[in-house]
Image (cartoon, rainbow, N blue to C red; front, side, top):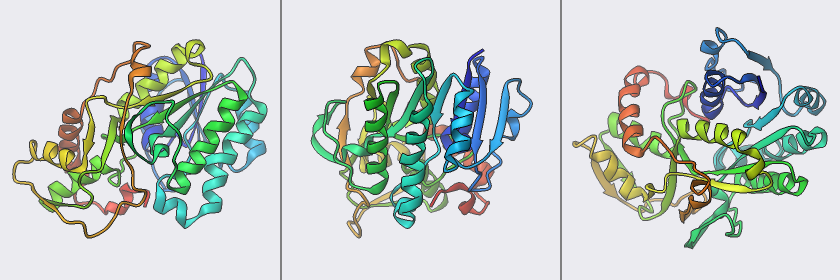
Length: 312
């Protein structure tokens, strides 16, 4: 049974991925400092093969010791998004980049490293984005993720997954992600005010990301040393198109365009996921599934303090 180390495994993606891999026969160790006081892993302690270590990836010597004892390394621990990164640049570099440097120092040829990246590194482009498109990071978050990917690919042992904007329900719920945020506001406020409504992004369900990590583990030899865009090819949508999709599920929703502000990082692009799809990968969960799931799940948290469900 292969042993997987997931740093930041108590987070939005990590809590979903940990459950998915345990269910599919892997042993999973989570290393997390629980900086958001999350309890998202409680349901996993009943499962054979699960281990939790409370610790910080900035403790490089401890991190290296733990890495050596695992077959597959997935460094999810990260300071995510422009506001959080700009608030603490030193922490951002240490977690998003130096963590990966520490892992690479002890990684051997028999281990697998799968690095989550972001397609926000592409910035803004009028051309369809492929894995050959140049980086154009417009934020510290995107820059640190680019630097981490460059270091990993230079090492020769690793796969980078350039993830689209994530949505969907997770044990460590986040309402500050774009689709999740729009659905939340549509329910609570009944209206959406859109700025730069024509800006396009690609999207992907959190459950499909978990499936993608397993796919890469099982096809590692053919993917090693490469980067892959991961998103829904059916969901290269503008903010307005996304809002209209949500309105099809919440008919009373009022949508208004008003350029009262600008996007933090000016992301605007259409992404091709053909490279990964050509290997036999395909998503299972579309936007309609995710929106319906969110509408139902928000009944559990709608009256809670929303600060519990955000990284901002």
